[in-house]
Figure: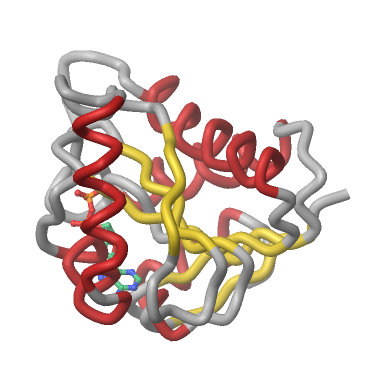
Length: 171
Ligand code: ADP
């Protein structure tokens, strides 16, 4: 059984085995949570991302997939980078968003991580509506077959926190 915890705040301050990054497919960093992780985690993360690009992901990490690097100076053992889908009002991309959570947990299992922190993937620059993103995130974790003991959703603001709390029936 995986326990779900909700936290409001900055994911780069969390102490867990693995922090999930809402990366972009280039793996070369960006804004939002990605920028924050690279800023606080230091250059070791980007170094490994560059190596991954050179060895496996020359065309970029595909949407819905996940890959791990060191966590650099963060209080974690790994950063798991996953690429969320950009929100579309004409195409249902929910399966890709669910895949981000599933694949990140699969990578976490491979690494033996027991505690994993997730941001609300795709809800920033990629514009996914928070309520729908929260539903998909919670369902994906509930349905995952994983040895991860604790999934911590780290929500940046009040509104995101309240939306996840409602989704979990905790409010
Ligand atoms: P995406 O490109 O997947 O939409 P963003 O980083 O733009 O990724 O946003 C994803 C979510 O992460 C948004 O809800 C945003 O408010 C939130 N966020 C931004 N910075 C942080 C942070 N330091 N810790 C946790 N969540 C963050």
